[in-house]
Length: 294
Image 1 (tube, one colour):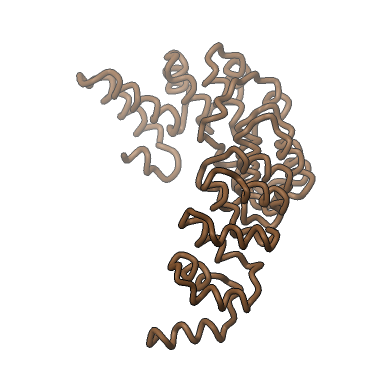
Image 2 (cartoon, rainbow, N blue to C red; image 1 turned 90 degrees about the vertical axis):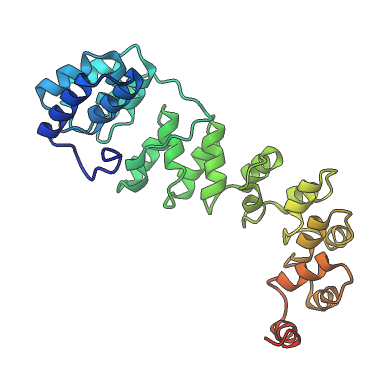
């Protein structure tokens, strides 16, 4: 736990002491190996520690991620037979771009891993473009999480071969293309699907198709889109599904007179949705609060 909470590098002396203690321990091997990997990744490496860790195949990926690893080892590790070792080298901060792009790495599109330093690094326009076109999926995926991407970079990431990259564009980018939002939301079932339907770029025609779906979740997730035709919203207000009717009543495209009618609806889901509608006139809000004695 102390290693996980370490603020900065583990001093050389402390690293040697920990390694000696781990080597002398008689408890589980897997636990010892895990501790050694943590030390190898965060220790302030000297020649002795570097040689010790590199001599152990299971520790080479951790060493490759260590920011104090002497540069002369990087070329060899970039050709390591272990995919994890090569991935650790490719994700290093400040690595020579030519070397980085020469490293072959296989990535799991379902992995949640990102490159922490790339989220906060002060990137030039050229840097952002280079990372958007990198061969390394983990770099493109991390870049897609940044809030400072221009339209041209977002456009490149929106066409990425990786579903994870395209998904992050939809989830994080205010300038995500409408065509991509529609394509991802059509099949994506995660929590962020609701946010995609509320995105300012989500196409009205795609929302209308979902609103007319046989799937109640599709209808519910699209029911509040402001671009829905009036007749589609009215149909959703009488939907058999409670959640669909409530969401439809929150649609900001509903005119004020219709919202006032819906506030008095016998259907409590419709009435609740109308009361939550951000287009509800202020006078109606005050009337509701007055009636409640608030």
